[in-house]
Image 1 (tube, rainbow, N blue to C red):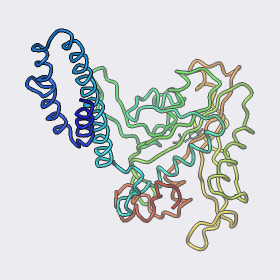
Image 2: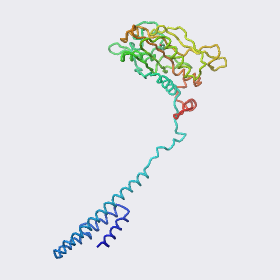
Image 3: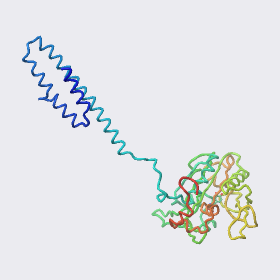
Image 4: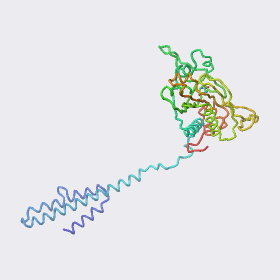
Length: 347
Ligand code: DAH
């Protein structure tokens, strides 16, 4: 009987599929299987012999069943391994060059600016593009009929039933108000976003991008503002020799207000920084007006702030030598492949 067992075991072990294995199981252990038939012979035996033979056949049955189980497990394992190999997706496969997209210069410049300011603890803040007059003008110290409202060429919506007129925000300074009304100082925020004005030529599009900065804390002064924006411009334009000047200006929401210019040379047609007698206006900035702080529930006796705002598209044009602003928004793949950036870093 041991010989018979070894034969069956060898047969089971050589089995390659679950189907063949099941056939063997039925043939040996099934209702009319060979081992079942052996068990049936027990009844005809004398009692002493039956006991001994019974134990032997039952042992045989257990060993065969166990061998089948363990072989089934092996076959299942190897079938799974085979399937995993067959269905494997190679996620490390490199992207074919023709399928690579590129990063738009505006996104690139937004990322450069954000990564610089995040070193100094500035957080990103956002607000809606469809705004109300309160956030776009009134709270920024431009009450109704204030002449500065006219300079913004605002796109207004039809008034609602309550007579409230929404508008497309004309600047990201709205986010100053939204942030200060939500959060107590100290504050350091950077507000990137789209803004809208009714204007269109080589250097103006009805939609463009601004970056707003706001710092509110105790003891903030104009020196902090100057150092922040000068260092930023040197870093952004990758030049230590930038010539920079602050010119007194007027914005209703800052006092004093200034505009920052970068000295340049335009005599060759292009723009060269670090030389020449021309000035390029790049930044609006100033100390947050006490009325603006008060409008947001912040005590100007206790807290001071500085703010700045600039056109991101213009920064992109200056840094990467892009001549016409309008092309930025035409979604022309040829333009993008020329001026765009690799998603894997670099040009
Ligand atoms: N909001 C101004 C504009 O769009 C730019 C600006 C000027 C923002 C001075 C500021 C600032 O935060 O302090 O023309």
